[in-house]
Image 1 (spheres, one colour):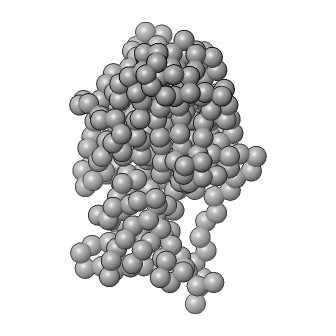
Image 2: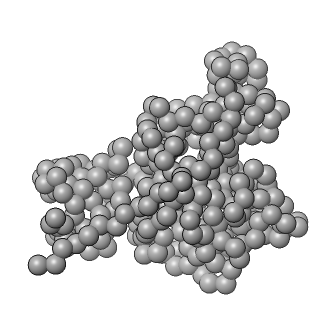
Length: 313
């Protein structure tokens, strides 16, 4: 009988080599293991001691920064799923307590080339998490590649966890076809779409082009989180279940669900079917009852069951 061998997500010198499904952040320790740049000051240093990735900016000096470097650039389509919870307060003190100085900062999530995307000119796309819990996305305003922002429809409550799926087409020439939640979508070249809790928030948002420091043809090699300009502060956002998907895995749903089952801390409880399974590296799933790996393509599953291959060491 043939043995099925699971893929390995390699990490060397904090550079991430990606498979079709790559876990970027799931728990304490992933910040140090997978992020190539981690910096800030005493009031604004990225932290994962709680098991979530905390990016807080309670400083008017050095802003917090945490970036992932990919060993091979993303040249075509990709999907990034993550959960976020905005815990920003209207006012803050230097240690993050309130009341104090009025908040006006933002935590930003950016993609770029082989340069830390510390400024708009080095950014291909941007998402923003405001001190007032507003959730924004960046797009090309057509003016020499300048980056503008627009809010996703609807307010998002502070302290509430939301799941985001960002599907991007980094190709300069080809369209990207994918299915999300049973609905077919087509992305034009150099555009991306945002899904919040499985609902499409916006489609065909333009990636920034035409700047001196961001070249779409070079692909995306870095992404990560950072605070606002040095004169602003007060934003505090927690991220979790950060998963990068490429190839056929694009469109396989966000981090909040797997085959209709809710996912919490990477696990889905399927009850009498498969029991408790870890789906972080789906379609490779780890079955707790069998203490072993299974391979299950979501497209093969139906109400009648699914084709499952079991790894035998």
